[in-house]
Image 1 (cartoon, chains in turn cyan, purple):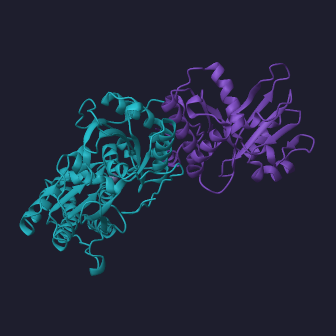
Image 2 (image 1 turned 90 degrees about the vertical axis):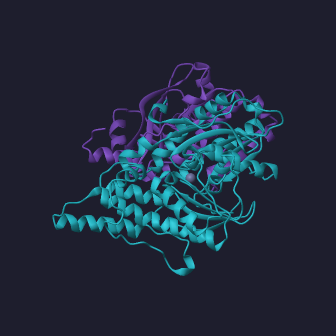
Image 3 (image 1 turned 30 degrees about the vertical axis):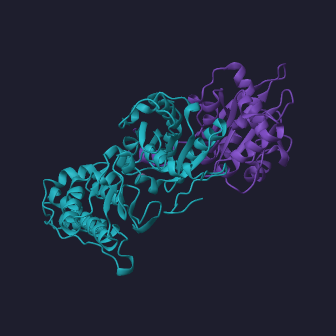
Length: 362
Length: 214
Ligand SMILES: [Zn+2]
């Protein structure tokens, strides 16, 4: 079953050839709607990073359908692994370890990657390294050649996560807060669906909002109570947009879509930016990073940069290139490298953990 | 080796494979082909089995053979001329089922009379009414459907297999795989896919909303 024509393939910064003494790790990523395999040398140098996105398959549903995602991961994963080896000019026997993200994510989707990685590692007699998908996102920066200085505050925003992380020093990662309901990308998708703009909502709203007035409509900002000031909640904002539309339609008012989406986007970004900046201030961060698909949002990038420069000029903002911001297997292989060095290998009964938290190792 | 216990397939499958090879003194590199039950069955369960088999075949560079779960069940009945109807619970008041006939002549192959499908019990009984010899029912679906079968079919027509014949055994899957290998020695891992028999629910509902159009 060849289904690759359904999906765009991206290859990021491919270097060629293996250098003497390097540790080559094959990474596998199937936690949501990206099927990906990558070979990374010493956790830093990408030899190949093949990503197949299922975005178009899920477009008609306005969001990721888990069963459809799982089926396509299985249809594609092995040929993507072959492609990742081919592009790097390598054979299985050149590898030192197999790495896989085992959570968090969609359980059925994760299971395809986990079962594949376990069978490969067993058949090839290579160690298996289990990687936390969320923690792996911050390795996009190592791959980008710009290591973070600590303490670092990291905001991961995508269709699957809204998570604020703190790295106090190398190897100690903690979660400061996360969304209680929708992920930021999900909120974009839902609003786009209500307005019948298409899917995925993020890029469409980003573009439309540039023609609108972000101050046109006052939508609520959910700051939450002091004890959970780094948590997020976007479902109220989505409801406010729906209510606004409903009332405008009932009063037969003309709806200015660019103003509406610009105001929605501003409310969401205000919260993301202010919470990230105050986390950076509270923890005296020396660097700040954003990752995830929503990191591509032009308004978020600009506003975060502007606020950081003003409030805490000593902390530079790191934004990896988009192909490393979104889900990819290179970050999995990179995150596996320190675990490989410490001999932290996963057993053959490794399972998928859809709700895997930060700092949790199984 | 066949285990039927609570721990998830994901956790059990690889340790079981390892234990089986260790106990039989076989190195993984010695395997000549890998067969897996391709379904019908639970979507997630099938994907764990097929993902594992595909990756083993890919790494060991050996053929990969997707075996129909229903056919593997029917393989357990060697009687020449027998009519065999495997049943698996497909939920939503349906069974994954098929009808096979063990040929009366050598080499006593299985012949497919009703192709694998998800059928309501009444539909199944309807399509079985044309056959006038006793039918052997087996498979885990008997747990759900045995009482209804006993009620709706005359006692001289339905043979309900005892419990040991109800589970799909990996050895039967391997046997079917071996047969497939003789017919298709090049069977590759990229072609090995589950036989879901059903579309994803979301896809079905979306098509219904759009009046059956794709
Ligand atoms: Zn992610």
